Length: 476
Ligand code: NAD
Image 1: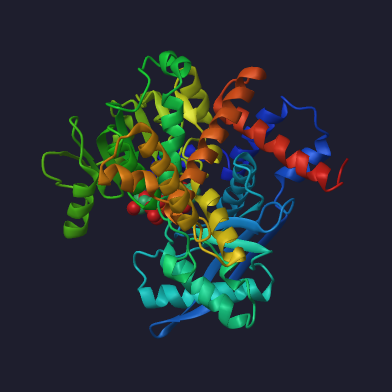
Image 2 (image 1 turned 180 degrees about the horizontal axis):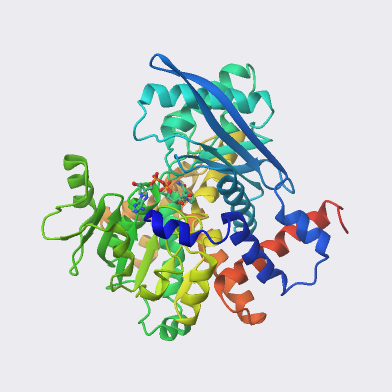
């Protein structure tokens, strides 16, 4: 976003945007004001400054960990590395985590971390120093641990940072048998789960695919059911955006534009996502991709003709100054908070269907939950049942072949007999979670006649959180 638009977009603090959405939802519920205030507020905010020697200089690093809600423990949420990190942003992202976990039935309270650095201009060696120091600061204050608070990747971080966090935690917690569960999003070789890296992007895909199956919603925006042939624009080709783009492309959607920091590329016949990535790796930029048009002002890509717009970079990118020019019929919030409340109102009047972040990007935390469970159970998914399922399937197939007097081909046999691998179980768990989550929100929207999916998602989340307070016997 240009500086001019940024200042115009920031009419509200990011945290108050979430409070506004929360308050809209609260109107549909009869809950005591004090309890609503408790759910809304951040339970613990830890702001820290620590020194790190970078080259010959000592640099003071500003960092945060916010635990938004302790109604379920551990707390859970990613860590962001960005020069724009600030307390308001981390508090908001932590709050979104609480609501997200409630919607997809993941038994965690929300949290978020942030370090105010630009990882693009700092060497890997120094990022490691900063990550390890940040982790030891969290340990000192009891802000990390398998049953306390479990970080994960977010903007600017990935498997590499998670494995440094784990290693630091382990070295300072000797004998901690569950140490692997102190952080998720780790590489598979270090206790990670297969399918975590692509989980958020795949969850975005499952959520939008489910919406596109709904005849009523599709006809409300003048589209046919199904994803095939739908024109898609994706902003941000990082972990979430890249994987989402790949799954949409594989499902037959046409990726007409991709936007990155340096600019965007457009081809109305569609862009091949893996070729764009190869081009990016070779040239360092998505621009000048063969047979595509460059768009220098990357923000303008959001305003191009398309059916589905997926902002997968940062917050506040759709604001009151560009909302009227958005042509997409569906917006899938892969990023956290990409649409400001003012833009939300404008888009709703235009009849745009917005699938909210607190549901749509919950795939990451869902699979992080699977990783945490795997780490606590100390066993890989599928280890106990793979061979058993294969043997059962073999016997069943033999009975069918004998009674039908027909043999099936070796390829068909391989497919039918295969027992579940970890990746199969993780993906089916994620798919089920995203489909169920969508229908719970949609059903609530219909039964309470709620104006949009975002408010319905907040109503669902608040109801779930109230339930757990009641089960705990607090605020009966
Ligand atoms: P990432 O760092 O892997 O990728 C972000 C990408 O966006 C980068 O390639 C960056 O260059 C690009 N970008 C930044 N500003 C841009 C702009 N103005 N225009 C176009 N591109 C821009 O981050 P990520 O993990 O993919 O996270 C993206 C969003 O998804 C964030 O809002 C994050 O909070 C949210 N999210 C991430 C996860 C996860 O599992 N990683 C889970 C839930 C939500």
